[in-house]
Image (cartoon, rainbow, N blue to C red; front, side):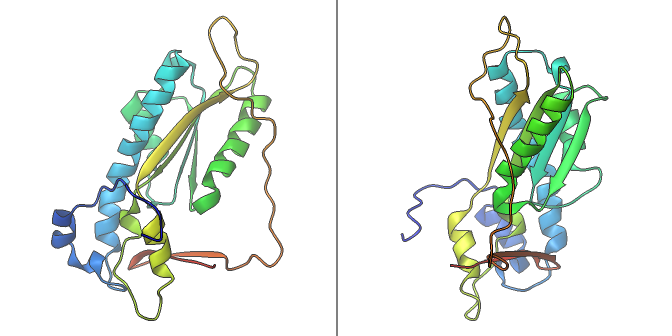
Length: 209
């Protein structure tokens, strides 16, 4: 109740958790099972968001020159960028960039990267996708690490996508927003505010108040 979140979407079901009881413990090895899920599901969820963004853009997929894909849910090769390219049927020559473990600042990071790509490559149209499946982080409680419950109370599964470009063609494109500036800095005394570690138990993370 204190999270004030009334509804979340999650790939995990009671059946999946019953089949993988180690995922429900706090510190039992379960990375293989988690990876098997997210490697498949993260690109699939990203595809849904990307397909909607492309439809709203209204231009053929062949005009997409770059793909930036970001996730904190699992690491694999070929990456989710490759899998999404195949799922969407993008050109094999699309310039792909895969970003992992960006956490809560993923949205700002991918927009900053996309802005740089669009402004420095004439005619570029950058498909940006963020996709997350919390199967990599879900775990049981611990009496000594109650802070680990905060993120689990806040986060769910989801994906977002956008097409970024410069010099839009007014006859074909209707920009919804102008990305004026995107930057990054490290705040003083902020080290340790968010910690995440990929271990045999999955991705553990801790949030400071």
